[in-house]
Amino acid sequence: MNPTEARIYEALRSVIDPDLHQNIVDAGMVKGLAWNAEDRKVSLTLQLTTPACPLKGYFSSQITEAICRVMGEAWTVEVTFSAQTAGGGVEMLPQVKNLLLVGSGKGGVGKSTVSTNLAIALAQLGARVGLLDADIYGPNVPLLMGLEHAKPAVREKDGRPFLVPIRKYGIEVMSLGFLVPAGQATPWRGPMASNTLRQLLTETDWSELDYLIVDMPPGTGDIQITLAQQFRPQGAIIVTTPQKLAYADAEKAIVMFRMPLVQVPVLGVIENMAYFWTPALPERKFYIFGESRGRMLAEKYGVSFLGEVPLLEEIVQQSDAGIPPALQQGTPVAESFHQIAGEVARALSRQLATATV
Image (tube, rainbow, N blue to C red; front, side, top):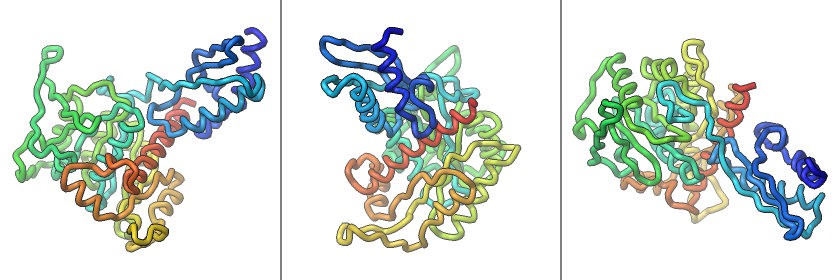
């Protein structure tokens, strides 16, 4: 290593990844370092732990400042970003890097709305994302995505038939709602429901995905246990509302995911319908159902509070129209989901780093 290269690397060691608590050189994140003395330019690629990393601006400014301190203010720094091709890896789904379960312990908390908009927000951050509607008894994702009449194609692969996920709004989608007539009930016992879900997961021709978000059915039963044991998900996300009843059931979901029989890391808690907000009073938040119970739940179990989603009429209107509000960039709702997506990506990165230590 020549003196100039050594100086640059030493400068880069002052840049700390706030999630990994390690400098970017020793963490192996710096790739393709090059410099040109005549042009006074340094370029490098920073390999992130996830393509949905929300810290790109932070890293870019910190790297530029660190290099200019040792090379001089006249130098320019060009930082490009890549993401690790290796991931946690999902058993039985080799093309999926990370399987994330979105659960609640009870129905009626907006879990499907959160799952759908989280998937879209992660895709908008640059990740390759799939969404599986695992609520066998009441699949709502087709309505939320404007896909009520969609029917997946079937293609042959290695001599076997596979369902082709439907692509819309930048993500791949699969749901039992695509396969059964609208309004038809599915009164299945636990084993049949679990087998159907396993087939939906393994017999769908997913692309290479960074995240496969699974909108779980409510409860803490057979489907949850089957998914955890057969696929070993990288993490679970808990959705609650500020109400005491939702809090109590969300708490049970956390306990279930931590049971020895299940053992799925809980990445954090999202509080849906957290407060009412109106443009007429932009500085105020009205906590109709109570305040901060999602944060309290996260603190009680030592997991991340991933964010809160407001209670707004536009969420209902856009969801009913099949237009997820995360698409409406610049609105308070979209900003909430993008902030949550970034926190989910960071929480997963921390979890994977801890798991490999």
